[in-house]
Each structure stands twice: as structure tokens, then as C-alpha cells.
Length: 558
Ligand SMILES: Cc1cc2nc3c(=O)[nH]c(=O)nc-3n(C[C@H](O)[C@H](O)[C@H](O)COP(=O)(O)O)c2cc1C
Image 1 (cartoon, rainbow, N blue to C red):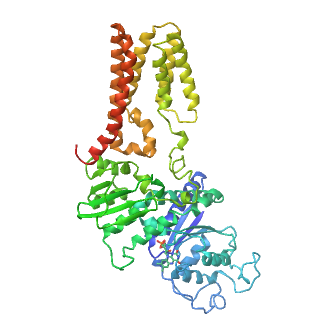
Image 2 (cartoon, rainbow, N blue to C red; image 1 turned 60 degrees about the vertical axis):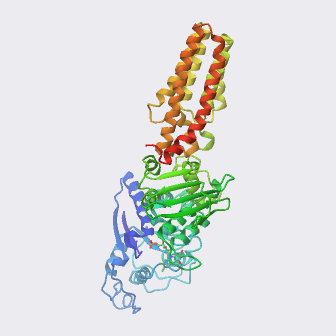
């Protein structure tokens, strides 16, 4: 397949529209490769071509049929137009139409048609000129970005023109609003997601045609209208009232504030204070129910204060530096409420167009092909593996046989109760451990030994998990902090590793003292000690979860 790409952005390869074209081509080529089809791509950059405007002399019709009297790069363009099986027109929207140089190029295609008048079969316009060449089977794709929040209703002139040129419905389009966002590295997670859909469209186009679902995704806004417009307004760096140019760090902070999601508001207003240490500048962002507001006079009471070099914060925002890692390395400090940091993406993820339209399920909090995030009701819960152990420990010492039955029943009950939840390795180990020991008791092994063993097994499970990548408690708690993304946060991991180890040690000791209490004839004290100890550890856990990350984030410990 011969493919001609006509890139008509004056920005050349830095064009937003061309980024979409690149993704489309990538998908197309991959699919062609899978199908064993060869693709040959020729790219033309209109800004680098010498194409004068049409003289209107009709020489190409009268004197030298099919040949223009002007000798410039258009000769090559016409040859390539005939060579190509597919032409991709890639351009920005300028004044609701194609940029001027591209219109010149389109006008100069006059030699490609015959002078005669012909009725149109598709009813577009009042007639047409038949093609001088056989163009059957040749395909056309228009790819363009525009500056407004939506592409909808912006491209009627463009489509009107191509309906005349190619015929109504005889070409594919990918039009995307908010085009300038493709050049903003801080927003790459959303724009990359969009580009992945464009790539998919390329593959599907090669396979026959772009699927409806893909088209729907391509029509979605990158960000909700208000989010985009707040970001776009801030990006000009001009004070709306005074018209004066603003400080770069203020523009940047305003754009960050524009990404605030009001649905993260949990009933309490927060004030995020950004202190850029290298610039000695402080900005406050009030995060409220209705939206965010920047305050530059420091009059608000900060709930979270971030002290960071501006350069570092920009690198974090651009995804060049991992924020959580940098925090753990004390390259910046956080004081006050750390909760905001732990749920940063919930607060500053920027509301996408999809969410705004209510079609949330694949954008956040669910297992989307692009996000990989778990659906809420599939998250594993710790209760599912705690229930069997607790039933076993409560029932077996009092009524060993019935306790054995209860242990097995608790395993089944827990599996049924949480059958929609994702199971972890610990749920599986619990099933094997509790059901195995319960069965053992029913088969006659001494119940005291089984109870001691159960505590040791439980403790070992916690302790050994610390040697792996994900400590036991993190396997469950990560879903409260953005799913697997939390595993990139060293503070989250170290907090969980310490707590998991502490619980492991507690239960190993529980096994030991249970053994000695039974041997010493003090079995009556087991129930009391084995309830009080975990309760105290629970209190410690709640305190430590707040204290440790906050202390580390404030840079008080290395
Ligand atoms: C002269 C000019 C005219 C523009 N006209 C429009 C327009 O009519 N509608 C629109 O939504 N955006 C308009 N824009 C914004 C561009 O379409 C937008 O910035 C686009 O993403 C640029 O794409 P590119 O990087 O591929 O050149 C205009 C930009 C310029 C410079």
C-alpha cells in the first residue's frame, strides 16, 4: 500500500495534528505487517514545499491538458497523489478551514480533473468535474487538531470542501479539540491515552474500517470543558484584569490548579501551599467544593505545604521524575496533611471528557484497557482472609470438634461472601491453612498443637510477605491509593513493609506464648492476651500509618 502523508502544519513535525497522524500510521503499519502487506510511506511537509497559488489561467485544461504551466513542487505532489493508495491530510484547523498553504495545494490539483461538467450522484453541490485519472479504490483520511475545547461543529467548512472533492462519506476523519494539549508533557497520560485510540484506529482502518467504539472514543473531549478552558486561559500567562504578563511559576501553578477535580472534595476544603524554594515564591491553592482558586498573598491557612525546587516540581509534573521516589529521597518536603499527596491523582487527575459525560467506567476506578485499574467491587478485602482465622481461633479452643467444622465452614463462607472480589495469594493460603488444620483436628490431631501452629503460620505468612515485592497489607491497602500505582510509592511500600513485619512478629510471638501458656496450665489466659495484643497493634497501626509517612515526607528522617 502506498501512503502519502501531507503534513500542512506550519510547525512541521512538532505539529499536534502530526502527532495524531504518527500514531495512526503506527497502528496502520503494525496491522499491515501482521497481514503480510507492504506499506510505503512518503511524507510531504507543505511548509517546506514551493507551491505558488493557482494563476487561474486554465492552461492545465486548455493548452497542456493535465500539466500546470507553473514549474514548482506541485509537479511532485501531483505525481505522488496518483501514486498513493491512501492520502492522509494532516493539518491544524485555521479559521474553521485548512491553513492557507494547504488550500493553495488543493487549488493546484486542478490538472487532476477534466474541464467538463458532470452531475453528481451523491447530491453534493451543483455538479463536479470528472477525474482525469482512475482514482477507484484510493482512500482518504483527514487528521486534524483544533484549539477550541471540542472539534464538534468546527469542521463544517473542511468537511463541506472534502465532500465536494472526495464525495460524501468517502473519507475518514479524526478531528480532535484541545489540540494544544498534545504539546504539554504534564498532561501526557491523557494525551497518550487518546493517541493509543488513534493508533488503534490506524490498525482498524488497515483491517477494513475504523470501528464505531473507536470513533466514539476519538470524539471524546480530552478534558472536561471547564478544566480545559481554565488550563488554556492560564497557559497564556496574561492576567485577565491587568493584561500584564505573569510569572512562569504562577502560570504553571494555575494550570496545576485547573486540573483539580471537584469530585475529590470530601466535605472539607483544603489549602495546598506550594513553596518553590529556588524561586522563594509561595502560592496557595484553595481546593473547595466548587473548584480551585489561586491565592498569592498567603492569606489562607495551609493544610498541606509542599516545599520544593520549582525545577524539580516541573520535572515531576512532566513525568521525568517519579514524585513519590523524589519524596522518599527527601528532594522535596511535605508538611501537614499527607492524605492529599497519597491521593494526588484523585485531586489533580483532571476531569476527562468521558467522565464529564457520565461514561466513567473505563476512565477511572475500573478495569479499562488503557488504565488497568480495578473495578471497585473487584478490589480484594482483608476481611475475606481474616474471617476464617478469627473463627478458628475463637471456636477451636472452646469446642475443638465443632471448631474444626466451623473453621472449614468459615473458609467456604468467606469464599462465597467475597466471590466477586479479586482473590490474593493470602486468601488462598488461608483456605489451605485453616481448612487443613480444621480437618486435622477432625481427624484427631491435638487441637492445642493446631492452634499454636495456626498462629505461627499466620505470623509467617505476614513476615515472609515482607521479603516479596508487595507486603501483605499493601496487597489490600493499595486499592485505597490508586491501585498498582501505589506500588511505585516508596513511602507507601515502606510503611506497609514495617507494619506487615510488625504484625508478623506479633503473631509469631502469639504462637510462642500460646504454646507456653498451654504448657504452663495457664490456657485460660490465652483468650484475653490474644485479643488484647492485636487490639493494641491495631491502635499502633492507625497511629503509625499517619505518623511515619508524614515524618518521612517532612524530611525529618533519612
Ligand atoms: C491562525 C490560526 C487560526 C486558528 N483557527 C482556529 C479555529 O478556527 N478553530 C479552532 O478551534 N482552532 C483554531 N486555531 C488553533 C489550532 O487549530 C490549534 O492550535 C491546533 O492544535 C494547531 O495544530 P498543529 O500543531 O498541528 O499546527 C487556530 C490557530 C491559528 C494559529
